[in-house]
Image (tube, rainbow, N blue to C red; front, side):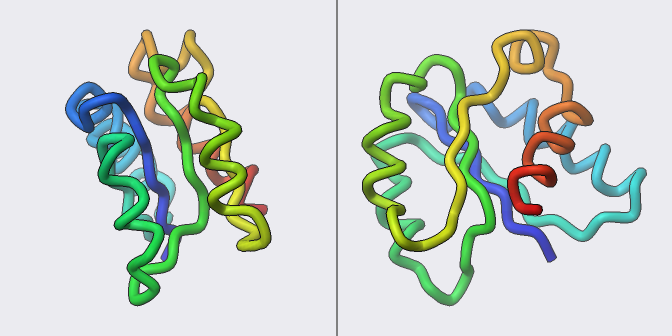
Length: 105
């Protein structure tokens, strides 16, 4: 099970992208828990060790917070990356899922 967290400013704008990523994962036979949270909610999700996160993807609107999240997750091995503007704008769930899986390794 891959656990993919998307972060945006309010946690709402990525919900459609989550749906498209879930559909892409299902089509590829990949078990994934993909969810979106607001930037302010992210820290509490990091602290929930019962549901470890494999990768964090930031919406383009919060790209300026990348360093902050990298610092917060330093030493955990959890990669942090900004979603490509083109993939985000086109709601390319398959492309964003591919990026997430590559980051997970």
